[in-house]
Length: 336
Image 1 (spheres, rainbow, N blue to C red):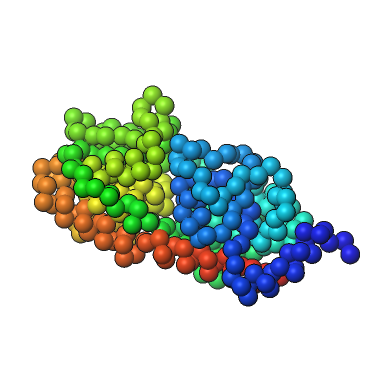
Image 2: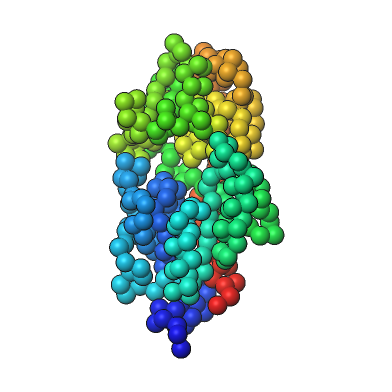
């Protein structure tokens, strides 16, 4: 008798959604624009609450099935679940929405514990703060393990790359340069390796894109970024504390020869000397870049192997299928 009209409708709608597998109405928060562009390819309707962050079009266009909203729930929409991608105050908001609308909540975690402070305390706080959510998920097994979760209480969905899109429609001659794409790079040296990049690329031909005021500008569009990848022989990734940067996988899909740090999940994706060159030694990294700059055939071979890795293991079809399975299983298993 105390149930809100929205909660009653959610109960009535649940079985219909499961039987029909129709498009879901998913309440979310803008978190990672490029990642959410991929999420929208699941075909569902996403409604982003304007709390803490708005979509930045410098990072990508807003998909047609993604709407920014001011009220919860949006008018004339029955919400099926909540997707929260940060374990901050948005998680508390998600809990209140769950209570009001009687819908399940998925917490999907992209980051690792911050090594600049007590990581064990962060893990403990994460476990406590997320104990009530209906489904915990992560972008990789690596960061699921880092947060103290396992297959008994959490799932993971690895990145999916739209390989058809990242194929350049017209053949582009690759410049003999070393490309990096990083946002706010100098201010995020601790996790993105700005000083490492400077130490290893001195006097080498380089190209930088990304939203870093005073240093570099972002690509004009995702199509422009595609052309940037395809016109660059080498992609250099210096991430120090990230499960795996999306730009690294995009560059691989575009056939760039990759030189990268061997941190976090990257050694699971790139096998040194086979589909890329990886190391945590500054001299080795610089040597790898120079080797690829001097050997076009080796760079082409590495680039082809990198693209094949994305085609086989990190394609968009798998990503969409895994997310849809997670969405519908979370609704199916939800205990009202």
